[in-house]
Image (cartoon, rainbow, N blue to C red; front, side):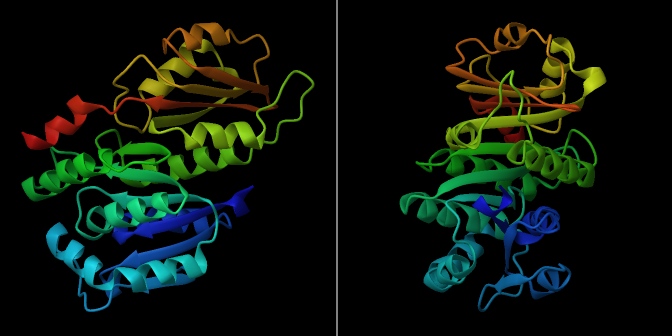
Length: 289
């Protein structure tokens, strides 16, 4: 099902994650203000913002450049990315990704694309005040964009950023390409798209068969690579499990008020995804301190 999802990597951070998707045969495009960063990516489709020499974490400058060249940027993206479901990957703390993401997401949502923002949050204890200011402003602006699908917040304060990037790509890809064909139930592609079309924050995780118990699944969702789960309410729970005796009700109780549950049986691993969560405002507010 990879052919149904397009990938847009914005800036150096977003491009690094996008490159992992391209290695799994997703249609991918890289957009950057820096020619040097673009040259460092071994990717097929690259777009350099005309007149730019980099961003230097200056979101306002990037937004100005985007305004001046937006039709050209969009045309080049649309020539490559024709899918309805589009992941837009970017760092909230830099200049290029955090600056370009909002107008691109707003435009794609307006023309009927299902936009799935994948936002990297900085470790505020290691990043500069400018990076944290960018992160706060980018997240505030992103929350105001209407018509978005699932939003993933990758939190670099959790562990090594390259580990986070790799885990996210592998876990998202595992969910998209579930190979379940059990008489006991399956999560079909329509259900997967329903989950990813749901606005709000989303988390996804993957566990081995030996760890496929309700307490371990709940713990993995809370202690994974994402920003802290801020609410006990969610819209959708999807779970494809290798444990046929798994008590799914104990997982739904962790997220009161779940609108619907999609479940299936798999062979070797358990993939769990929760969508429609609230934004973790306490986490975002930490960028102001």
